[in-house]
Length: 383
Picture 1 (cartoon, rainbow, N blue to C red):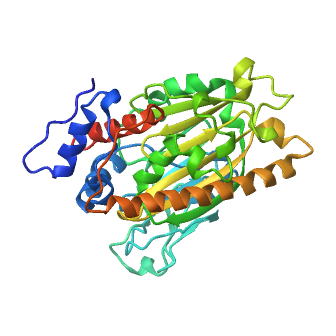
Picture 2 (spheres, rainbow, N blue to C red):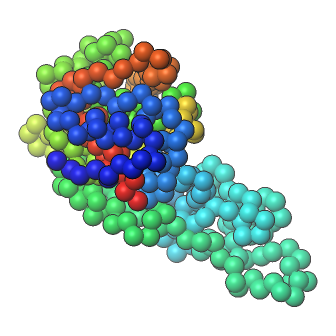
């Protein structure tokens, strides 16, 4: 059994309760204590010990195809910009001007230079200061002394990750076992066809846990995918330190749920197997032989979560003459499923505030939730 950090007298009761719960064997495991989702103090610990230290996914590499393409993200209180520089490399910087500390860029887009919207200080795509209006009149100013601080940035399986932790092992090292598990899919080559951003009224962990388990499919999604979801088809192996996963092997209800006839990478049962991946803390991917969709989460306080929602097709389906029809059908379904999930996770968030709320035993199909709780219990206080 993994060791958890030793509790101290000054630690909030919620951390002690979480750790005590996680010391139980899975056969006697309960859901996490309600205060894990409602406590501002616990969120502050998560920001300190999880978000400021872990690799965080911020999007697909394909979103930054051309020089000057950029996307923005947030690591706790630190704004970050990731861009493709003039040499074709991915770079990540602090997204804060070095003059009066304004945010530089918002959202996604393409720029020739990073121009501050406040006083027009502007930076080249390598982060160096390229121009500062009228500052040549200030004797103490030296343009060459200014460059945006770098942020660590790596890629894995077509995804971009960033971290503020200078000592974190590489993404590839942390996810080496997962790379081996999903290698037959060739996820790097899947093509993103849509990307959206939303804010839901729930705690980020409630949404993460909802993704991690398929126990809720027959009921919550009874109007969409529920009738096609057979609980006995699901496998939930024990998780790993940096991720958990589960499998569903079935004949898909959508043609793109199984491998395309031209797919020569996947053999045997893999041609019908969907992998549901939860990469800690906030990257969630449904990977099927024909398509993928994902969520990237960022807490906005205790009661809201910012969501990146995207997806696309395996390369064989991208090349299929019916690709547009397949994607339109998939997107319609995913929107309906998301609407159901939103109702579910917002209802849970309302429920965890109830004075009589009490966590119950987890089902055999909620093994990923148990592993996620243990990850949090190990991480809080370990930094």
